[in-house]
Image 1 (tube, one colour):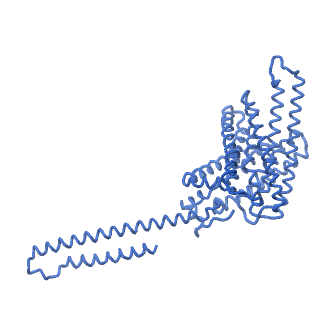
Image 2 (tube, rainbow, N blue to C red):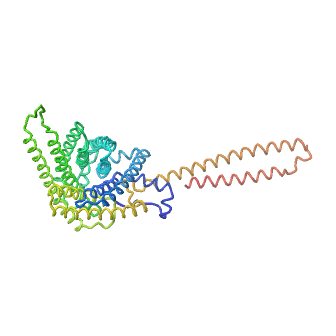
Image 3 (cartoon, helix red, strand yellow):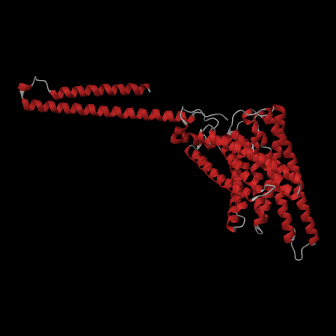
Length: 476
């Protein structure tokens, strides 16, 4: 990402001039929703910290409120952008680098839902709101992960292996993030709503993991064949942690819920009274389900650890020189990895996993602070992070065109006004002359008329001004 070319303006002028905010909205892309993703995962990390404390939950609540404000602001910006210029929606869908970031929108929304569940789980109304939001998020996720991907197949230009980065995964990670949101909601729902959410969450998790594994295979070969990404995109090497870390948390949470549900209700696929299988069998099945979730979670954490090491090595090998909005690729993927570690360390009661989870959590928070400072300074204050591929300078050309059009229109009005004045003056002079001849008679016939002299001078001046305006308009 680069800096948007703009006229030489002070920072104060940028903040106080509406035209520059219009420029920012036009160059506002879905990639900005990675800010809400990275901010939202911080709330989850503070709530699930391996060594819990009330002040951490309070801090997480403040960050959750901040995340709601950011998501609302960004939504207004994006909707305004597409209302002003509907053609930009088509441009977003047909551009590979922009369309992938559409997945950041439902993922940012999911972090808000999880925060609502974490802080208001004791209020039934809040749970119902979260339940409705979950289905809205599911619809958004399906639109991105199925609809937008189909557009990639049919409308975008042919893709080349060297242009593929970890950003491609953002089209499929929403499936897994949505399943984790459902898993957070499960303990607070009653039958049959909880079973419906469980089935949908598992299907979303399955679809997301399978497609992510396919993309990771292609991405691995891209790294082998074409080297690591460029400096500006090197942070995208962290994105593979997202589907693996969040997938680990999701399957663990689903397994824990299902195990507890089996123990509590003696649920069996074929229900009868008494149950078709002894309670001892159901309890054993519940323990097996719980352990299957732990094993699947550890499997995904192990895979994620491989990508974590490779990502850090790649960034050290090719250190980025300038901050850009892509730096938020550090926070959410790495945060999901730390969150999965925190969850499984509590389940296994392992001090080593707790220590590693706490270390990763602190590292994510420090990276979030780095990204937050850079975004506030270079983005909101200086406006250098508002950049949309293919729109470089478009707003300025449009503004200049509108200005020229306005000037030409103004000059045309001046010209018409001058012509009308000239015509009126001619008529007035003729009337004055006739009146003078009629009143004074023949003896004044050859005398000079002062009104005629004055009108002639005025007409000559106006004709010169009109001719000058016409020349300037043609030059413009």
